[in-house]
Amino acid sequence: MTKLLFLPILIPVAVGLLALVMPKKVRIVSELLCLLAAAVNFFVAIMLFKSNFSFLLPWAGFGIEFSLRIYHFSAFILLATAGFGLLIALYSSVFMRGKPFLNQFYAYFLLTLGFTNGAVLADNLAIMLFFWEALLLVLFGMIAIGNKDAFKSATKAFIIVGITDLCMMIGIILTGHLAGTLAMSKINLPLDLIGSIAFILLMIVAISKAGAMPFHSWIPDAAISAPLPFMALVPAAFEKLLGIYFLARISLDLFKFHAACGVSMVLMIVGALTILLAVMMALVQKNYKRLLSYHAISQVGYMILGIGTAVPAGIVGGLFHMINHALYKSCLFLTGGSVEKQSGSTNLEDLGGLGAKMPVTFICFIITAASISGVPPFNGFFSKELVYDGAMERGTIFYIAAVAGSFLTAASFLKLGHAAFLGKPGKKIGVKEAHPAMLVPMIAIASLCVIFGVFNFLPLNYLIQPILGEARLEGHNFSGFPTNMTIVVVSLIVLLGALVNHILGVKLKGSAIKATDHIRYAPVLSGIYDKAEKGFFDPYNIGMGIADLFSKIASWCDKAINWVYDNLTVALVFACTNQIRRWHTGNYATYLAWSLVGLVLVVVFLMWSV
Image 1: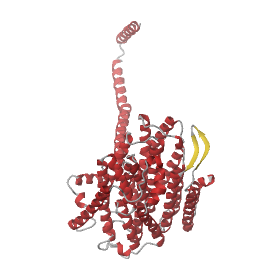
Image 2: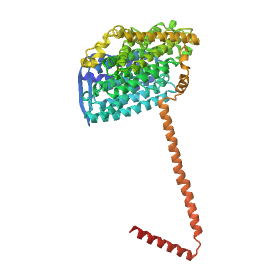
Image 3: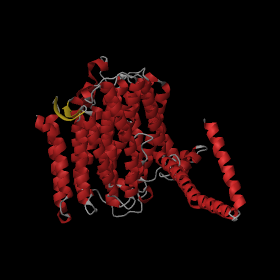
Image 4: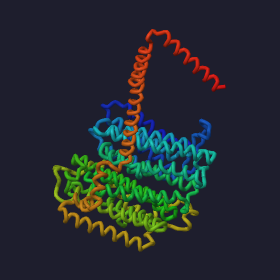
């Protein structure tokens, strides 16, 4: 069993490196290697699912040990990443045909899978940091092989994620110093002042990996620039699973996290703001993939808010929403990929009437769009209700923010579905249903969205609630239909309101694409949206602006120093030289007077210094 623990890391990494050096002419070999490695990885994850053991090898000293651990939580995440990896590998085998850089894509695909597994299994913070930083490199590579603007997007992602990873390094050093160990299973620190600082540093990198604000702005750019399977694999699935996994670990294990601590409020505020601000941007997008990317950001807010409540219902809801989001958002990106593959575009102006031409894709879209919107009986409804319950327990304002986010989410997906799949056919003609290898992953994931909703006791009782344990659950079992019917009724009213809003918006503007324009161009909001769409509020642009200003100031200082040395000093030397030359008249009486004055000054200086 100990040997099995290394396989989820070694197999994807080794095969990924092999795929990287395969000749371009044998494209099919890279595809088969990727599918085979993903299938074997999935099989190993199944075998390890109910395991509970560790591997420890002393390594570099200073508390850095090569330590891996498989237990319920890490086994659950390992199984989830393996499942998504296999399905998206199958999807990619068709979607990526004819695309450039295939070897690099499959290599980065498998390396991402292997390094993610390593980060999940790591039981030493330093080892986890190693895999975490390795993911940064393949993140850059996987984005960079996209379209002509991909390198710029990849650089942006690298800088944003890299800066937050610096926080992880500092947080690990501080946490290790406070705990006297880097072994994650042995750390349980109080949230005093220094402990809270360490928590926030680690929290930053966790929510950054999950895609929360303000570390989000590379995701919409990558949605346009990177190969589409990347979006389904990384921002939609792996990064949510890994980021929320680490956030849950530091909240439930590494620190004594509770509702009365200050960092709980910080998490809830970050979660609420992420929900609202990101969904407001999703609402006005007119590109299929870019709209989905903002929802990938917004939905992580529910996970952070749920965990931040520090109450059983909220934490269970946040973790349940983590796996639910990975399901429906990866499937939504796959539907977007099918639309792009078959029609050649994801701009909503070019689409329309695809529901009749791509019925299976349309049905998968309906299921997953209903899931993310919180429509019963799909999985997203049940996880959101738990987050609502936890938020209501901690403060009405957080509950209102979460419900408002649901209204805007439903409104934007009504717009997307209507514009792309219903109405008049768009500019693209001759569109037909996607390849079966692309449909199978979508059908499988959409089916899980139904199963995890109707039979929610399966994920809740066997996957989610065991993570907390009986003590933290406080005797509650959150499976089944929500018990707080008031919250359920409010949720249904909100969804109905979103439907009415869409119908009125279409009648008002005469177009599904413009169904939310009355919000976009509302007083006050119009000016804010104008600035937001120009990147005025983008933290990356703000940071680059500050860096540009600093570089200009530094350039001015450099030029000023050069002017002092190259111009002012030379001018002063010439002026002094010319003056001294004029004073040298050849008159001995003048020289004698200078000598006497100098002698007097020397004597005065000596007397004063004594």
